[in-house]
Image (cartoon, rainbow, N blue to C red; front, side, top):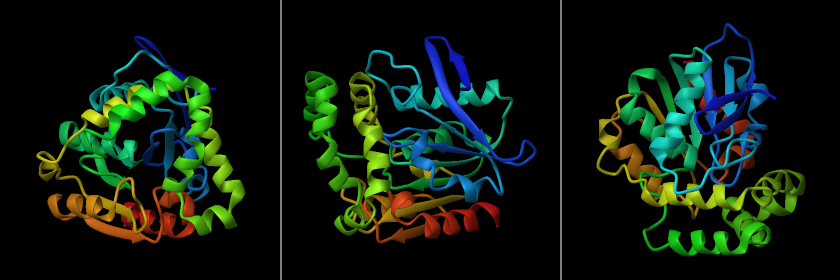
Length: 262
């Protein structure tokens, strides 16, 4: 398995597609890993050299004591890309991955060709909503991650999708159950502190914002705020909950590729 060494551990990544194709980076949500994008790889790898990775605290990547920050997560990614000699790239991030994308566009926009912010927000959750979750995860440990499974599935998917697509739901839910509690809690702290509401208007990279009609974690109001404050951005809405790329993979892939390739 490919890893890149950071000063405090290893970051796990995978590359699909032709070596000579433009680079598209995919960044996962809180509680998932690079497998979140399994439903996209075949379509995206026809056009791009697709780099996906496990954000710090997730999957096979390093787990260090928290709190983390969105800057730290973003610098991890830039270190990975520098090691791979990748200067400019397209970027697609979902939820926490979208927060990383915002940091990159604000602080390292010269490295981005285009940006896709999916099911995310300039401020995710509230200052009051994060501390109980962080405390519960740290106190509950691995059994606590399993206990979160059902409630999280209800936030991530609509009820009809859960009933009709049990294998896809289980594929994603297993990632959450397997998550390291400290890595999860430390990234909750990064999301707790992330707030770009006063900064997103500085983004000048061509941007597509994707939202879900039934997303209660990052609502269409969050998506519309980004759209209203990022000049020239495009907005796409799917009748999905939080993981629109999993609920509507074909439509999602077509819309994202239309934006990225044209």
